[in-house]
Length: 640
Image (cartoon, rainbow, N blue to C red; front, side):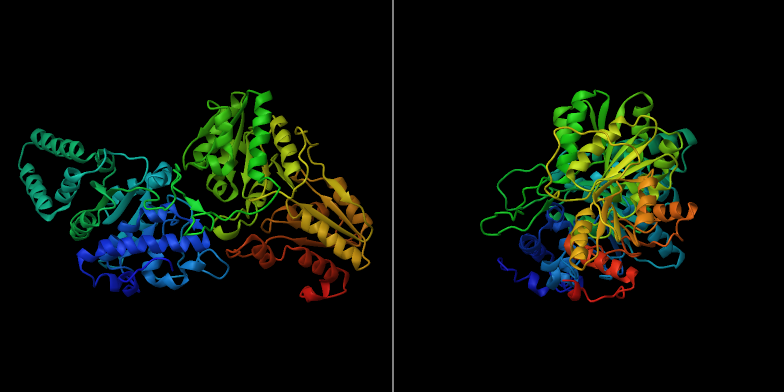
């Protein structure tokens, strides 16, 4: 530990925090920020969001009786300070490591995490459900949802607010405005007004005025109500939220703990009100130690030296799959002006920021709105454009109805570039790209591809650009490629045709996606054991290369399909084809290897794939078991 934290050292849980004097909270916040920075230096991870809510975190746990009062963090990548204050400080330097704390909130990890999250815009819906459940059980605890302004770009947040306003259920929503400020900059006057409109005296006076207004004729009563709304809107800027049925308080300086605490206490005690929205303005990454300015205030960082601030970097000569996709799409767009890029609040994560720099009028960031992104792409496609919708696999799940109804049903040629396919390491199961093959390959006339390496990705971009009669998708993993030579230009692949990389006689390994290198290593291993192995790259899960599969079955004793996706994906497509063609009884033993039917815990990617049983050694063990030369639980040491 590089910083002295004498006051924070006395806080093991929020009950300890609540024993402190209000005047001590600012020091707690300073020490908590230092501890968060020091922990991030050891592990890396989400950094800026947590630093931006340090004072808010202290104030919330000080004012509310957590965990009895439910505190829900939207996305929860900002929850490192929350975890430190809620009994998990001893494990904070193992966060995101195998068997360590999860990088987001997790119900099984702590009673202080009432709802697990990692995707955005879910907090208000979950909180409203908890608030209604509280009322049905006749309890009196509070429910507080903390949601960032970025998450307010998703329709789900407004659906929940609309429902909360209609139900008039007591619910507290904290809008953490850390970049896209809805109101003017906060200051002494706005802080005072926020305290005033949240105070008992103001609420009582306002209630008296409303009661008096009820005695007025209808026309005067309506005018009085409108005057009240407009007055509050001009003072605080909360008209939008008031129209949704929320009592608006703010904007408030989110780094002034002496302001936050009394306002939150007022809000806590205003039990006569229904839903309340508290608008808090913060600075993402506040107090970060780096001198270099950054627009995202170091949203996520690798490990770094807290003394020199030098960040850890991995040594590799291979480019990332994301950068390869970006360059390939730019190259294709230079030749075809109909190509456009679409992303949902992830321009840098998907590489489309580079596309936007080259084609600023042809790239569209729609915000955290995957459903809209898909149907927006469909609208562009029916007018003759070639939209490439670049979305992480885990986030594309949120737009499944639009994929089915607005794209597949109408055979509209939207191209889906699916980043972060397979396991993603320390972000864990909430961000794993496990299910896209399963949920796309079941759709009629959908072309589903997976890149085995970065060169194949270049060709798949070119392939998707040429598909004009139906939707298509190509998936690729997070991280660096395998180091193969990149082609000068992408060449469209023949739809539904795989390739054989190595010809053998006894065992066939049929890979779909980025496990191909493990299959090649397994083939070498099998060869050393006297077993000749063919290695094939399917390239397509739909349409299948049925001729390739049929030849592999007829000419080998064992066929093993290998994929980094969930059950129901590529292997299932292969089995269905073999069953329809009466080929399951051909004498070839068929095995499928896929992600286990459970969520794989976070850790380094290598650790995750070992856990999932999709490594070279696991493939060899599967083959040996199929041949009857050993059980599936064969000791891997005998195969080393």
